[in-house]
Amino acid sequence: MVNRKVPVTLTIAGSDNSGGAGIQADLKTFTRHGVYGTTAVTCVVAEHPGRVSRITAESPSMVAEQIRLVFEAFPVAAAKTGMLFSAEIIRSVARELRRRRKMKLVVDPVMLATSGAALLKPEAERAMARELFPLAAVVTPNLDEAARLLGRKLKTPEAAKEAAVGLARKWKVPFLVKGGHLKLKAAADYLAWPNGKTRVFSAKRVRGVETHGTGCTYSAAICAGLAKGQSLEKAVAKAKGFITRAIRRHLKMGRCTPLNHLRA
Image (cartoon, rainbow, N blue to C red; front, side, top):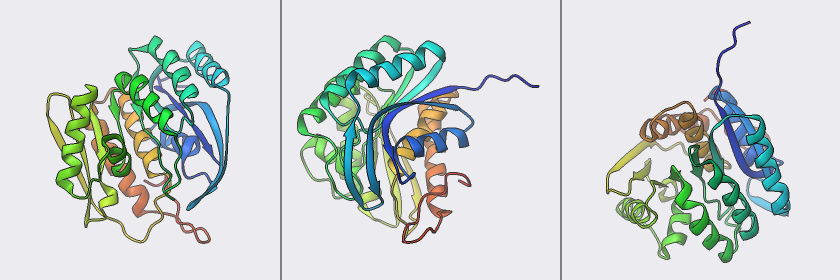
């Protein structure tokens, strides 16, 4: 038997019963990238693509205990956060992660569902920015979340790029603003560093596909790349290719077209 070192990743996020987003999407992505995935479940979401029906949160102490037990047993190389639900859970997560500053952290600031449903209250949004953003190797808002953080609408590629630069400078960590909601021929994402450096990652848009879980999958792929020792730029580039293939090779199941994590 060959005993090879497999990087360990951790997702701190909600459970999606439809399997396309949340920890389910993260674990599929981790496995596809050859890393060992662990979890800390923040809440259970009853949903399907297009509708969130009910959300039940775990207690902050339970979320913290899951994180502590993972780190007690495994050498976690990189972690990501997804849906955190409340300010109390966010503060609990931040307290645990501050003790592991050598670990790479991807913060996916899940504020809005694809359906438009609000997933964080304003107090929780502020707690995330104050407590988690400074710990991140990269923060990955979509266009609507970046607009929410900035307090203004973002309607052009230029505005999306400026948003990434402004957010990176404000929080002093890299930001990847995903521009897919612009619905242009190319789906472009804008990575900016606090020093003003930028990089654009672009791919041809795949039309007519339900994109439930793309943000979770994208950030999980970046997390996997960082766990394997890739630079942020390389991890994002590879993750962009992965999410594009997962959309292009989507599955058809009833009225849903979920991402194809297994053949991306």
